[in-house]
Image (cartoon, rainbow, N blue to C red; front, side, top):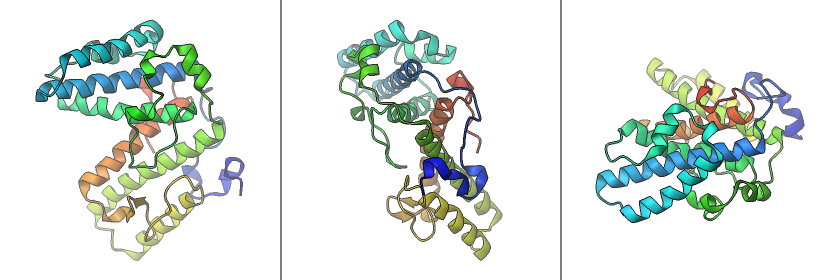
Length: 260
């Protein structure tokens, strides 16, 4: 089955993103600018954490940040929200833990856009994108150079990956709900999850299921502890945010919703 053409046969039907539900996709130029803004947020977050711990090399921080800040200032200021503009201004050793975490997770969204541009290979959840996955010294490259290196993926591929990321996030939220409702041991619930995950298996876009559930580093999802489950959820959330933006849910990245 050609899933790019026939996702309508997968169940449940509400899971699969099909067709032009939102506005047109952002241009390749905008995708590159958004990717670089997200990399910049990650830079500032990482170095703020290093400064707070006393491990930071101030000279290295200034040099590397100057490159990404200069690139964004020249090419992408219009992509930034007011919050992002303040965030990117300078690393801050007193940055809140919440802001540091948000900046760290921004790299997963950047990697997702890099994948859509054909610059990176996809990494299965919960494997994370790293700065080393991007083109070498990406902040030293011009917008034109990054555009020339890009080989954008077809919208069908982005729709499918959106659906798979949504499935992971839905699984996290479902597990949290049924755990609170004490439904985990009911055969009907287990069968429901098995049938749901088997549909995702058909896409071949996620590691094959284990014991009727998503495979997370070779173990079934239902065996994850709360911290690991939250980790998977954060990965899925940031990837879904980027994929929703790529598919035209909202023009501004800061307005994107990750509801499943």
